[in-house]
Length: 359
Image (cartoon, rainbow, N blue to C red):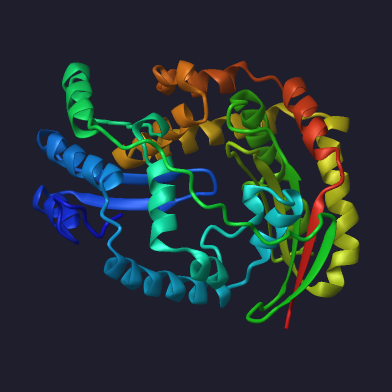
């Protein structure tokens, strides 16, 4: 995409953004691709024009594709040298789903992909009706709409039908044991499928549950297993939403011989959330933590634009217009009973488990 079009030379996009005093970036997630440029408000039209051309009219030149293949092969080789424990957990939680496949793919995928297949995929997916353009900054709405319409207008050919690439089979869920070169200590991962991104209240409830259970020294798992007992060198929880479905994770680093003792304690602490309730002190701490994390994350314009764009893509457009008050307001409206009920619904099931040991 960054290697030019009929109107833009390879590398010209980056140079144009830098000449505006800005920066550009791109990121690929399991359910979306983001392209971003941060420039002064007075240069927004320039950035949008280049983005529109890059996304809709990319040349996909065979020679440039050859160079890009070499870059991707290098990235795949680098990724293969790193522990793939988390990816194994996702494959166990979502067998056969998009989460189960590494975003980079494999060299075999790359070998099967032709320039014609790439063009068909681009023509089918990279179309205005599949995009969300999020603009953050000191620009009027009318001016923004005009710039976006001009930058992303054009008579595109009909969408092609890209050649399907059959994904390799995924390992079944349940328990997996890995031996991973480079690990200095054992890792233990638990994973549960959670609500999709278009169920934001349920997702927020699991974020609050995570704050109570495993985020910070005062959280239940950290305070008990690391701070008081010293049975683990690190432990934590997290909930990550996506359009296909979120994932709630517990991860721990520990000596291998500690695992038989740690596992039942973790299960007991998790169940205590809905069996014994949430104390007022830890409830207020969890709510403050989420509000502050949200405020800090939205300080950067590129992060805010990425957040708003993704929420619209995920089907949450109705509350995006008042985002700065909606999310903190939902936190205030949450009750411990609701969080306990949602936690039991999703975390009361048997998790996928990945145990990783040093080679």
